[in-house]
Image (cartoon, rainbow, N blue to C red; front, side):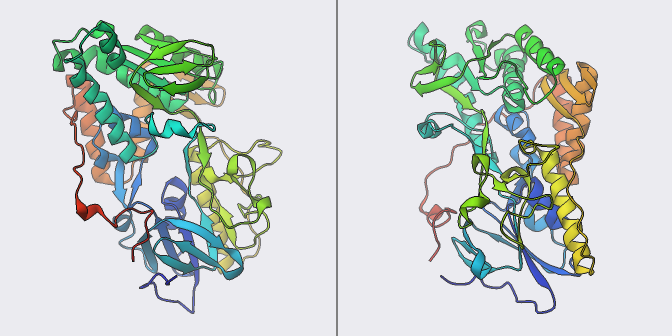
Length: 441
């Protein structure tokens, strides 16, 4: 296999290779001091995507470019930084080498920040029959499915087919599931009757199916109760303590024995780590996550680290590991970058990672959200405005912040953002060889 070209060897600096450009990977790449290290970021897409707002792209509330930002633009001013768009396939620790679909790359320090993907809990055929929501491309596919449903509904042959088309099933009662259900409920009330006056939207049903006893199980019981109450008042049908057994078109088979007829099934139930192959068996912990010590060093290796969703740090404070959320990823990235930078300055004493919970929040639709800050809980309109502020500040790029702000203000005043576009790619030979999973000869 050929070496990845045009990345110069630097005899005076050690090379840090970062795999993954999500919350953790992007943050540590920004924090690494170019005076001491050469940094190489590899990612399968050439942009950062702000995952907490993917559901708004899926529901036509935001343009995908508003929550995405090119890696190369982010690091235009960073010295000794290199980016390559490729897929990391395997690590060879004994050779300090990463194999990718475009060649191999040497490293001195390796940071694995590959994040996580949708968990189908062993039923992998659901990949081909349901719609996940973990990337911009998946959110666009979901948006097409949602909009196409209403176009198809205009031509339904009978009531049974109409019910199948207008039934939406969201599997998973975490933040994404709750937020998508709330967005669809808002669309049903304020937008869709204007776009499709021929349709009777009293026949549209939104089902939120969750295997847990309460929604937002990672938040407080008060937040869970408020979310369930708000969604129920907005017409969402909630199925709690109800796992999904299978989906065999056109029926979603519930673990309780019931069935829901639908062609619109969105799977946002759980995640699994995107761990890298090639490490020793003892390096992989529960759920495929990489077991790390309190310095985010992968068990058994001195120069390989894992941060964010793909890492599993078990301690007295977190006996089951940390939650796979953005704040954990950002804090791990900052801590590891500080340790590496200080080591380069001959400071051998590393700081152990200690997670500081900044709170959690979820929106349930227009003028409704829930917020947890320690023992303090908030819900309703004020919580919703706080949710808006925090998310605008978290988006990368001033242009994106302004675009999201303008879209949200326009939508709030007019109940209508004109982003409901059915855009489907046309097959073209030019795409051949651009698949990240296919080696380019």
